[in-house]
Structures are given as C-alpha cells and as structure tokens.
Image (cartoon, rainbow, N blue to C red; front, side):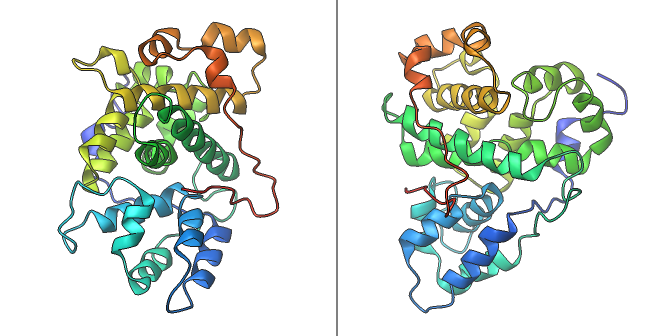
Length: 279
C-alpha cells in the first residue's frame, strides 16, 4: 500500500455529501407537495437512489425517533418520518449533475448498477430466508463507499481506475491490494456513522469475503453474489466469463448455483418511468 493512500479510519472522518439523481429529486419534491403523499410512490422513488435511501435511513435511525440501529428498510423509515422531514432530506441532497459530479465516476451507470444489485439481492434473500427489505436496502447502498473513495481520495481512485474500472467485478480485489480495504468496507463505515442497524453494517463489512468471518452471515453472502451479478452484467461478460468467475463457495453456502442467480430478473432501466421498484 502506497504511503500516500488514506487509511480507512482517516477516510471515514472526512466530510461527505453524496449526490442523488436530479430526476428522482425533482419527482420526490413534486410527490411531497400534497399533505398526504402516496407512501407507495415515495417508496418507489427513495428505492431508486442510493444516496436518498441512505439519507432516509440515517434520519430514521437518528436520535429523534429513538430507533437508532433498528430501522432496516425504506418502508419502515417512511412510516416514521413526516412529509416536512422528508422534504428536508431531499432538499439537502446535492445533485449529481454533469460529468464531474463525482470525479472518475459515470453516475448514470453507478445508479443503474446500484438498483440492479439491490433487486438481485432482494430476490436472492427471498430464497435463503433473509430479509428481502434489508437485502434491498443494503444492496442499494453497498456501492456508496466507492463514491466516497472517489470524492475524498480522487488521486488514489484514479490510479486504480487505470487498471480496472469502478464497476469492474475485479475492483474490490485490487482496492484491497492497493489500499488495504475495499469500497464495501467504506460503505460499512458510513452505515455505522449513520447509526444503521448492525444487520446492514455487518453485511457490508463482510461483503468482500463473507465466508472468512467467524459466523455465517447470509446477508453478506447475498450481497456478495448480487454485486458479482450486477458487475458482471455491467461488464457484459459472456457465459464462459460468468462460469469462471461465479463465487461458487458462497453460492454453496446459500444453496444457490449459477443458474439460479442468472435467472433473476434484470432491471429495465430504460422503461418509461425507470421506477419499477416495489417494496
């Protein structure tokens, strides 16, 4: 690890304002105009953006509600917050506008990837008796650490990107080798900063090597496979590359084979609404 690389704890102490999709922010602000907005529509919108979901869950797990470390999903959080509090969250999120919103990151691809990973995680969780709601939230937010690394330590992120892209399936391995931690370790640190439940923070912490932990963490295993699937899809890997790279030991631990994982429905990001997420 190079001497100038930020260590994990130093990185996690830095101020950070993660950007959201401008379109989702605009739709949320419009949806929050009525005194009694549609909870279903709000769920769909918050579930379409990782930064907004993180802001929502951080607020729900804050001191105001006495629920710190207990709110795991978007529907639970929405049940706690009033429309005025939701408007405050949405208005306080910076917009991911322009090519340089996050240095070195193609934000549309990141948002698409995050939603796909969340959907795959939710589908897999339902087959292994894990919480689909928690799996969706963790899957949606698991890549936020990558944004943090690019925003706080852009030079190091750019150096890694010269070798593999931010969404490349091999990214975490290279980050571990060069930095001593991966994007998901950063995501776990952020989850703890936001007082999110240990269920979510621990799964993010263990995502990189879920079977190396003392106890079995099914949610971490689900996230590991969901991230592999979403990243391999972004990379447009062929059948041979998928077969060679499939994390078989993690699949065995969950009772899943590659065919079961590949059968999960992909995200139709080009649909008219772009909001086919229902929690």
